[in-house]
Length: 286
Image (tube, rainbow, N blue to C red; front, side):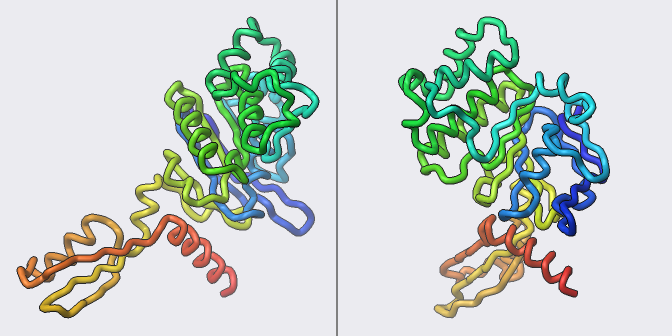
């Protein structure tokens, strides 16, 4: 079964179309990334999928359930981590997790809380008030609250925004562990380097899907600058970024022994995504 199925989904705020007739399918058990700049519609999409807002038109199914009409059954099976941690600063990390866990009527909640604190490497700070935590630490507590009931899907809205590189690495390590255990992770990000850490990615801009593919295939959409030095003279050409493109170009030279060096400069994933976005902007202007 697919974890998420979206059909012709739209959400309009006045004249602004935050989600524009979107179709999307997310298989179970993968890390699925929605990438786009601020205002692309990522947060609106996640809110529609967790049932916290009503779409203007279209339909969405999460684990086969309607997020609005079957929301109480669905919420037992999903976890949601909002962009800004929704925590109680005057409670400890443990007390926050227990509070949200009680809402789910979890058996052996104390044991589960200890397990999740250890999983997120927060055991040493479990008795400290959340108000004393850094932004990154609060993100981890928020993640604990979202997954205390062992959800089948985790919806994470900008989970690594505004945190230091060390905590970012830690969070992604946790995400991968969760995915390996069978949890589907659906996350939004405007940090385009994180595309490479996902199993599959959808690029959004102005409420529209611009591209959906694996990170490897998205990289293949980019260009590379190949420079050969022949008899001391540099010759440069622009080629595609796949290994087949490189082989084809080198074959043209016959692998001449006079070639003393080969240099390849490939486009970064950020450049590729921005190019896709800019291309769409140009199409709209026309």
